[in-house]
Image 1: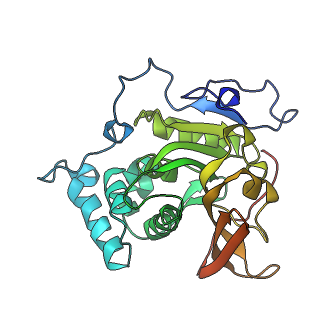
Image 2: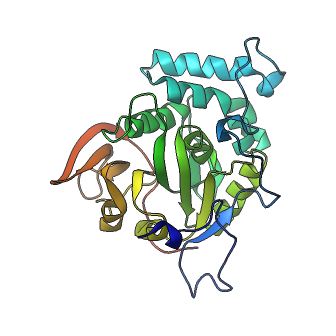
Length: 275
């Protein structure tokens, strides 16, 4: 697919009048204000890591750095991931009552039966994604597709390690919540989509990376088709029907796909359609 057929950058707002009648992903800009001056998106309103910790309470860089030190102690090594995790304010993505737990290594409810993954899982999956043979060490990954926007936290982290992020959510309530959460950060390289994640988003393909926040018994064929040759997919899958989940890493090569199952994880089930 040619570049001229892809959505604009950032994607235009073009929602269907009846989402149930047209269950397609529709791109939504994170911010609808005038385009920001050309600059590195990493510098756009995502908390910087100053030489001297600043802020008070949950806004303090000290709080995030403590989380980053814990992630490093748990085995996260990629400096790109640690930097991004330390710069995104996780407490902005959870309900006020749960904010004091935002930097603990735990998952938290975000409504509609969904959760925000614990920091270690987010960092681990993004680190695996960046280890793709098609991404040079220390460099940003190219275009990434995220399946399951949730509250928008992982999309914000991905925006700091990828050149462009398309994130799709099937639950309208969460799609709207993510839009509101991410509005504060004004990230021009993040495009939010409302639609069925199981069919991916072919208009943005091919993707250098695909990452999923929901697990099924198998990876949808559409995801593999939309993954670029040299790209990597990271997603939870069931080891057996109805069984426990494990992280799957899939690399698409010129001769086919290679995959491996890693540690056990627990994610919400992957579902089709929109709601």
